[in-house]
Length: 110
Length: 110
Image (cartoon, rainbow over all chains, first blue to last red):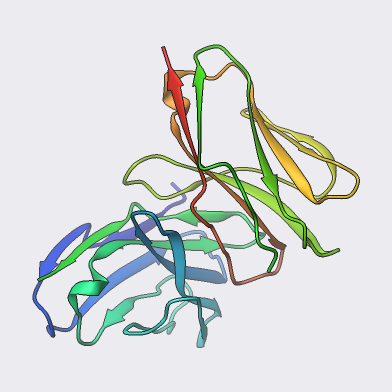
C-alpha cells in the first residue's frame, strides 16, 4: 500500500532534549516536505526536499533541521526543542503536484 | 506564490451541493489550482487539481473561469462525512513551496 509513515505518532518531551521525528514513504517520490499545524494558523511549511541531499527552508524553519540521505526518508530534527514547538507535525511526499500526507505526529514540549 | 482567499467557514445540509470559492488574483501563467480536504487530526488529502475551465472526478468538480482569478470547488450531495476543512492552493506543478492558509471549515448538518 502506498503510504507515508511517521514515528512517533505522539511525543511528550522536555525543553532542550534533542528529538527526531522520522518520515518514510514507499512511493519513490523525489519531493518530501514537513509542515506544522497550529490552531488558527493552518498548515505552515517547515522544510522541503527536492531530492536526495537537496533541502531548502519553508516558511517556518527556525529551530528545525532536516536531512535527506535516502530517497524514502526525511527525518525532522529538533536539536533543542522549546515549548513554542508544541504542535501537530505532518510529513508529505509528492511527484506531480499531488501531495500525500502522513498521519501526523503530535508533539508536546514541556 | 499566489495568495489565496477563502471563506473561513460554511454550513450546509446533507444532500445539498456545496460550492466553495477561492480567490487568487495574482495567479501566474504556469500555476495550477489544487484543493485538499482535511479531517481533524489527519493529514490533508488531495481532492482535485485543474488549470482552466472544468475538471471533474469521482468526488468533486473544479470550475475555473477564463481569467483564472478565482476557482470554485463543487461537492455534489454532501453527507455528514464531508465535514472537514478544505484548502485551496495555487502553484506550478514543479513548485516546492506550498502555502495552505487556514482553509474553509465546512460543516454538514443532518
